[in-house]
Image (cartoon, rainbow, N blue to C red):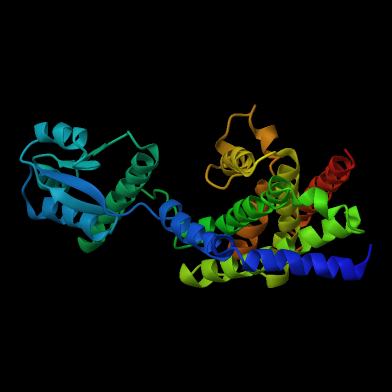
Length: 373
């Protein structure tokens, strides 16, 4: 390998990048836009659910119950129908996602210490919203009952059980605190693969790849000169996206920077290797982009990035071990949220290192064979 030729190839690659304004924008703006867009859409907590309140009791107590829901921030009262018959129509038309039905005689039954049912009707078309709304509703009613009993100086009959739940690492239960760290890894994967997958294909389409090897440049020179610029740009992308995710979304960072950087660097090698491999097996840039999309969807679904692996069918779980993003998600979430160190993340980091060597090795081997053909 000739260092001077490698430097010239690196300079050539950077010159091509500089002369392509669209590619430059994709390199540096696309990851940030993806992070911000996905961060607000996927990582958003369920709030301001459109809520209808059917108050059949019309008492101070029933109004206080309705106010407890509205002041929580999770429910926004948009309708107050006079009876339950209007609830179905509101749900059918999408004018409300939740309906709270306070039956007549609620205040009187509470004063007598009787069991008082409060109806919560949830639109089940969106399971995420329905399950979240059900949980919030139960918690709000439980808190309202505790406050009411305390205000009256009463206690529950019998010793009972005082359940005190403490969330260890994310006490605010902000979903975005767990989504942004894994989103950083996902954006790095997609942006690096997308750009790297176009590199060799672009030269093959232009006919410059064959011309390159008429010169004294060796395959090793070409490979190092081709990959190095994308390693550098991916490192800049990685740093920029991590900073934006940390400060734009105000995500707390409880870990060690060296652990996060190690994990992201290992993952970057995997992403560059995948991009190079895609570039070698694709004949056109369109085909390369379609292959990136083909890899992106299983990575998103099976990595635990969006859907918990624990809730997947047992037959699917073994497939998740073949997804490199799975280990990056574990490393990023554990580092950001838990503050985990190298000793806690030894196995995920080892798996990422193995994937880096394996995928990059396959890409290099395939590269040499392809050029030898």
